[in-house]
Length: 192
Ligand SMILES: [Zn+2]
Image 1 (cartoon, rainbow, N blue to C red):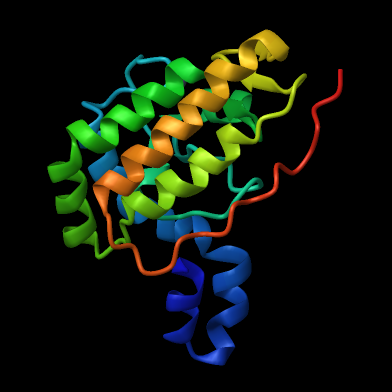
Image 2 (cartoon, protein in one colour):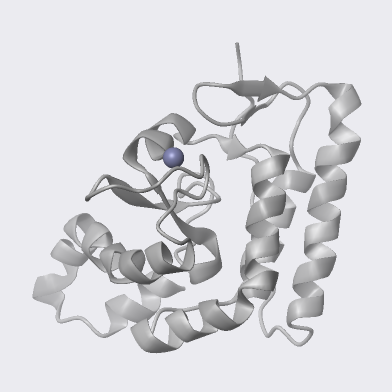
């Protein structure tokens, strides 16, 4: 959605640069306001972000579903961003992420307006909800640092329940969403 909108405004000569080089530049637009929103701290570990050693992180990893809209973006240490990699965040992080969208909704709207960055909480929540609802037995969730938690059958009701709750919260956030996203497929089954 973001890509299409942006691409439509680009001359063809710039298209390659946009597709292959500019994503990081674009994300830098929201880096400063996100830093202020998070009081200069890493979303995941809570430690201060120093100098330039921070990254705009996609809460739902880009490799799982490409969502650049504001609710899916947060600021993290380079280190935390690297350790999270393509893993789905564990529920403690996921709840904190969900609550940020509610509790800081006004600030996120301000950032979206001042940077002209897209924000569509209902859509983002819908996508993330679908992914958590589809988590299979045996997947590993990132629990911070180098810790991964392997989800077994006993854990699935809690993880899937989080997804269902998130879906309801997203619908509540924006009841009349024009195009509900197609549920993404869970891309891979984690192996040991
Ligand atoms: Zn960190």
